[in-house]
Amino acid sequence: MKTLRTILLAAMAAFSAGSAMADVPAGYYSSLAGKKDGELKTAIYNRIHNFTLISSYQDLPKYFQVTDVYPDSRRWWDMYSDIPLYAPSFSGLNREHSFPKSWWGGSTTVSAYVDLNHLYPSEMKANTAKSNYPLGMVDTRSSVKFDNGIAKVGYPVNGQGGGAAFVFEPDDEYKGDFARTYFYMATCYQNLTWKYTFMVAQNLYPTLTPWAVDLLMKWHRQDPVSQKERDRNEAVYSIQNNRNPFIDCPILAEYLWGERKGQAYDGSTSGGDTPVTPPDLGTPDLVAPTRGMTLDMGQVAEGKTAVTKLYIKGDHLRGKLALTIYSGNKDMFTIPSGSLDGSLANADEGYWLNVTYRPTGLGTHESKLVISDGGITGSVSVTLRGECLATPILTACTALPPSSIESDRYLAEWDSPEGEVVDYWLITRTQYLTSGGVQTEEIVSEGSPQEITGFDESDRETYSVQSVRLGVRSPMSNVVTVDHAGIRGVITEEPLVVQGFTGFLRIICSSPQTGCEIYDPSGRLAAAAAEVEQNTDIPLPTGIYLVRTAQHPTPVKAVVR
Image (cartoon, rainbow, N blue to C red):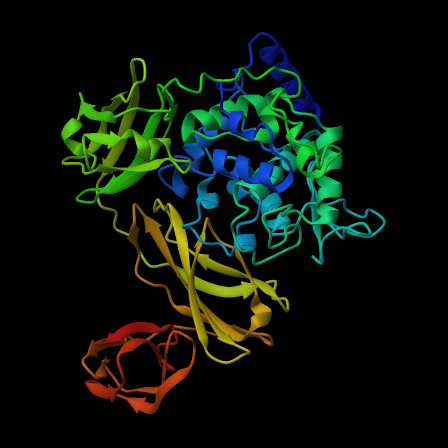
């Protein structure tokens, strides 16, 4: 099964042997010297956790063409399967959060959601089988849940799993890759509160749990940094201006979790054996953005705007940086000011510059942002790029009954109109909690089916689906209700509008609806009515409320002033 893959790996090794590895920027890790344990880990966090976010989640395949293809064949470099799939087509693949997004609660506003340092292309079946399970060694003495020759999912060996039912075990070729990815995530996002703690704990140091440290350090040592990782690290750095330090300086893992724990890091090694050249601490330097990078604003619909943040980080800058947009479609790109105080960029957290793309016509548009002055030599030019497309017209999806219903999870399913281009789908999930109250959330999905976890927190749930393209949503689908006894029904909601006024809510519906329930944001039942009809007024104090009826189970939000 590995014949083609072995050939490709050999070709990549030959390619890499003839090319020099890009150097780590001088002084990039100088702030780590003399620190140990938690202080060292926080110093790494300060170095890497601010970076330029990519334009959007749906654009990931475009970036994967830079970071995750074999250079001589354009075959996708998929660490989850050995199926030959080729760029630029992304058919058959998913955008995979190797460090599961559900572990931090799935929020799309957390930088980790679009952080290329842990996002990889993955074949769909392997991605679904992996679910949100932790890394681990699969106990092959028991039946294996999934095995495609590269990725395995099954029961963990004794002492592993952190309480999870199953673990995901990658191929030996990639065990070190995943270990260093998890080292990065446990450091770059040490400030997050974890919803699932299979491998992480609620602390800044060591963050990784003892069994996770043992496993990941073993994989880190057995599978050293490869040329693939070095090349990918450089590619990611060119896009989002931060690096994985455990690829550049593998010895750092030993100082944080291994044999050198308790010792101060002297900053003498980079990549294991390359001396770090200390920077001239008095020399002004612009660390980010890098010269020649492109800030891709992505695609926007006609009449819409896009705002993307550019990360600017300096060392010892003096006075003000000059920021100038020139050439090309310069009138379509704007920034808040033509200058930036160097002290803002010098700060540990750096500075996020809002760049706005407001196209005045269809097509692809480009301009340049030039950063100069502040004491730096020369200037840094960043290409600004965006594409304006006609506003899409989307048709409603059809929500289908769920499958694979278990006590704590199920697969939500739906059909979408054939031929429509979709960036992603939004699932509106409403939980009727066992503790009482109602909770509604929107889940971003790449396609049907979508695994829904946390079902054990609900007596029953409903879901409906919308497709999204360029920020435009389709009409809402029908609603599916599911409980622990199975599927309760697949229904179509009747229209319901709720208007907020001073001291009351007004119900707007074309025909009477029954079982009206009104909840406050904490999930407490604030009011109820056996039946409501057109222009029914319900007195309520000032606040935000969620309203549902038997004919419209999806809650509608309204505000009483």
